[in-house]
Length: 243
Image 1 (tube, rainbow, N blue to C red):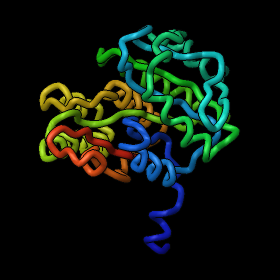
Image 2 (image 1 turned 90 degrees about the vertical axis):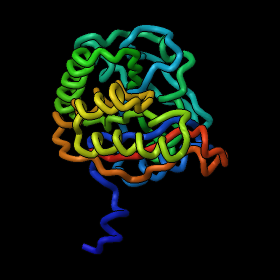
Image 3 (image 1 turned 90 degrees about the horizontal axis):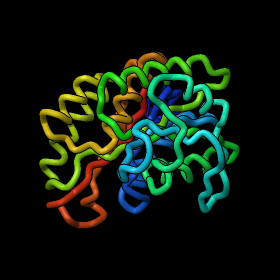
């Protein structure tokens, strides 16, 4: 197969990681990542809790979300299944002012106007609980008649200079490429990688391996500096596909 064609063909991913800093800053990385993945019509979105509102493991189980492209229903059947597992609770407060998942919706709507989804917000770094949730999420997706794509929403290192941010980002990316959640935890805890969606990524890596993923492929790595012109206080962004 022609190498260029292979790189451009939609990838049969079980999960993707995309940033959430906003369309101006990280939208190009997110768009490129989504364009390289084969997108179904069902999605399970997992992201961080930036606000501190709501339950530590929050599933919005009913209702619709609205974006400039229209209304999107929550997949109530998938949400109900997730709520059978450990720690996850039905909760709307955690989602009320959280942007990490909200900014993903227009990308997915554009590709799959008939989409449905379940949003999950993680506000705890309790590794044992994260592992249990990841295992249940993976088994739930594996058993689904129509498998949803797992979308992990996270930026990488925050508010250090460009050189330091890229060094720290590379530690996280290396762990993500190996699907090694323990190495990712060490990068965050020991090396100070301020990855806001670390907990969501930990859950996602555990689930992705249950779903058969063997590697993470880096699609794009960038920072906020090319947009802002500020190379002293930047945020890192990566887009990855897990298969």
